[in-house]
Amino acid sequence: MLAALRGAALSIALVVCAAAGAAAAPRSSATARTAAYLERIQTQRPELMHFLERMPKGGDIHHHLTGAVYAESYIRYAVEDGDCIDGTSFTIAVPPCDPAAGRFPASRALNDFVFRSHTIDALSVRDFTPSPSDSDIRLHFFAAFDKFDLVTNGHWGEMFAEVVARAAAQNEIYLETMLTPDQGEVIRLAQTVAWTDDLPALRTRLLAAGLPRAVSDGSRNLDAGELQMRAILGCGTTHADPGCALTLRFQYQVLRAFPKTSVFAQMLAGFEMASADPRVVAINLVQSQDEFNALNDFGLQMRMLAYLHRVYPRVHITLHAGELTPGEVPPEELRASHIRASIDVGGAERIGHGLDIVYERDPPALLAEMARRHILVEDCLYSHELVRGMRGRDNVLPIYLHAGVPVALATDDEGVTRADLTTSFLRAIEGYGIGYLQLKTMVRDSLDHAFLRGASLWRAPERFVVVAACAGDAPSEVPSLAACRRYLDANERARVEWREEVAFARFESYF
Image (cartoon, rainbow, N blue to C red):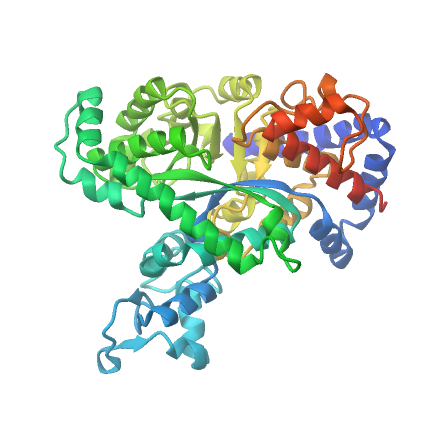
């Protein structure tokens, strides 16, 4: 029955997308010509890739910093730091190195091709081939993070520069990336504070124990990383990388598989930091949802978020939700309505993944609620296919589109999956028949649901009718109407969205 539901949703979604394209085409001849061109070349891979590389892609709003950096960069960092690589697990390890004991200098990965290849494969899912000791691509995926963890905190500037440059090269203009700004200081602090079910009292204890200092240290870490990033990219010079023009923001990631005091401390630090540092725009819970604490403490974690959101009502929340698939966990966990609870209790304005939507209590009602409340799904399409095996009728993308739930395509962990955002756009077209009008809608939604400050360029979510101040003003680098210029100056969200409309107008003029 569930397979039939997915299959029906896929068929209906394609019909809906086609009908929407036919209805919307007259509103913009340039958009109609572009949609028709994509339809003609969608089976011609060279032309399709050229089209997608140039297409404006808005924002990547589900992006893990450490998972987005490619293994080759981590190898380089390990060489710079004088670290070792274990010759069995290919984990980056602290010195001293001892080749006789199988701990080789990381520099071996520069000139030993076989050793380098094994290291890259271990730090990503490249060329994954099941073996008796490494049989599950999902476990291999999550294990990769521990293998390169040693070198991440010392190289933020280089990491920022890599992901920003890659995003801009694909015509993205906005990026929200997840990280731990304090680099683990809050988790260490939480070990000195005893748990209590009285959350206000626990908040008081943590603040008194020095959490504000960790929050300040987090902002300084971001300062240093961005300063180095700008130097690497040549920002402010005549040879500046296009990434310098990209708007970069951060989500404070909470490691949800940790003990409950640590989880609450991280949440508190995130809410504090998002209240004080405008670069930190949201809270998110990360780590595999089927880890023991993530499942066992799920209800408690949602209540933690609900409490802290009452204390800090202006802080945004987006949550990994419904990341479970049949067979991973007992059926009861699939039916525990993690997506509904993440929205109704945890306060999520967006959700990431949403893979178990058909197992929620009353899926049609939940989908209708998400559509009505404009709860966007951050769909990591390529990651879902590669790591979860969710292709065709098993994929949830058509289900959300058919229900009218806003969706934005995202990368998730582009370094570990060896992909980029363009890959997801390609899969949307080739795997699900998504046309240009739907892609453009998802691009616009990625910015309209981004956690940017100020009002939108659009009168209402998903309507894409320009606000009165800019109505009648054709997209251009500098709006002709004074009222529009004032509106954009006052609203960062609208300003970024206007930039994207200018990019779309330029792109569509080619067709």
